Length: 248
Image (cartoon, rainbow, N blue to C red; front, side, top):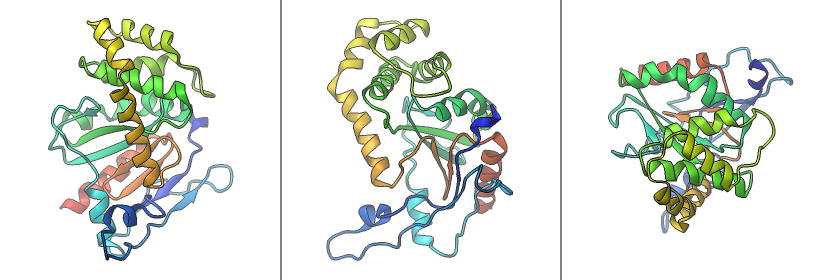
């Protein structure tokens, strides 16, 4: 699926126009400096060195903010890996995004050894940008997560959808995936799936991401570095290694 590795690699700091201003600006305070983004898009310029790089000394306040974003909440069903993992990668994604599907199917399984040894924790956040069916998909995953099957549902849903376009995800698809992964209490699942609080949580994650300036999926924050798109494993490994090196 190398054809999917088209989306840009974003070099250090995403969280563009107004992100730090919105979060760190209080009454009487001036806005924090804005982040900058460097993009290389396949087809316009080759990816000579796909690994994002950081610029620690230019904006330490920005770096400190970015490293504060991981939630590290014990028992978070949308997280995979130890709470005290060395590195946290936050992923913003939409289940109907083909590039998100490529990452989930091709790259995520290859990161599992880093999760297992305590190096990496992945925290998922919804960025439902492709309409109501995207919200359906996210609500189904969260409802499954209430019964300990968040990642199983997410994986099965991605596997069931084509890696092109934005395939429909109606109530029937959501129910079918829940049955496939063995959700034990379907009555509870349906209640959680339809619960306005579930939809509100999805909207909150999506609104937060958009407030940060994130407008495409998948987007990943690793320390102070951002990767955009379904990049190959080597890109993630290089960024994780560089973030670990900062801790030495």
